[in-house]
Image (tube, rainbow, N blue to C red):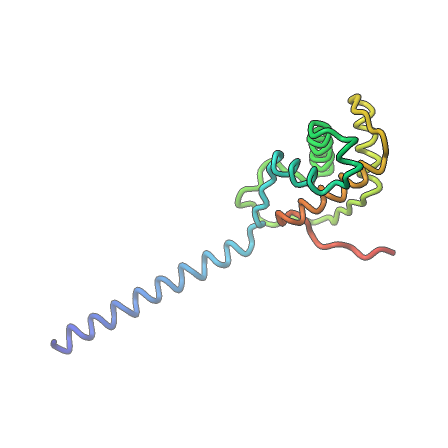
Length: 150
């Protein structure tokens, strides 16, 4: 092989490496600025929550009741601005901190259940449901950092 061919191969190799490095670096930077995708599936969430309820709560809440309460929870999150409609490849633009406490959510769900004629025999069932639903959010990566209690 002549020196010209070897030089051409080395130049082509360096050029390919530079193109790959620039492309990978640009994509890594773009992906770092995009919010991670947390996919919420209602049926999966319902199963997850129902499986984690204590036995007594499972006996008092039907699967359909759990599903309806989860839908009410998701609507509440949407009303608070935490469930935007367009999130695919959206830049992370959260400016205001939004704190969700379990007591407020539990009270909201108890009111929603009463308005929609879902019979809740014991309020503690909704407390357990909220905790299990928040565990589901954590499992799919949809939960931000927890705040310090004052």
